[in-house]
Image (cartoon, rainbow, N blue to C red; front, side, top):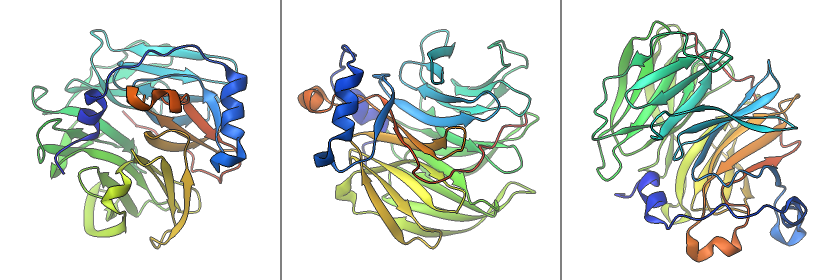
Length: 322
């Protein structure tokens, strides 16, 4: 395909966040003519919002502005930056830890912080060439491992997917990728769904949670490449797979057998990643990226975190045991 999500984002002119008018924006979200169920959850105006994950212990949403190098924690009353990359470098993904705190993929390390935002372990090192690739999306498997991928930016075929064991050991799972992206597991943990944004395909792997090994790979779902680029995904409690389509202004929902159940339009052209949250895990959150300047006035919600209440029911987010 040749053009990764990261490169296309930075090919756009940067936008200023501007002012936020919650009444106007929520009115726009509720406009029946828009044919979508979204409301503004967090008026973030993020450069590249990603990976919303619900912390059931603290009743808050964790999400990342990857391009800005910051991790946010948001609840009904506030949105707080809980960690910033010291040099402002990009962040790949942030996940929850079993003992509290967060694991953050940045540079060539997995940074481990406690619930107060302080490093409490030596960062896990991952053997990547930061001059050629950067971390992208990831998620935790049923046994508490962290699977995290990379992208080569201007160069296709050098992205990889790594498995990080709780003791910090890193193991290569997949290579020759364009942009390792959305990843999640079926409720029973025996099947892994994975997106390489260089392909218009959601892949399905047999997965051994005991060993962390990948088994047979198959095509789960395919989109017309003209629709956009497959991005982040999540699997709900019933086994349905929800995947965002970057530059496609939609989230697609697939049944466990790969049948397309719904196409949900979004009021932003660049939705990035869906994830369930809320006290009942029945709100679907979707992060997004800023729109190109040429269409910015038509997308006042670009970069915000959106929410669809009573969309379904998600799984309890898995945590990294490291």
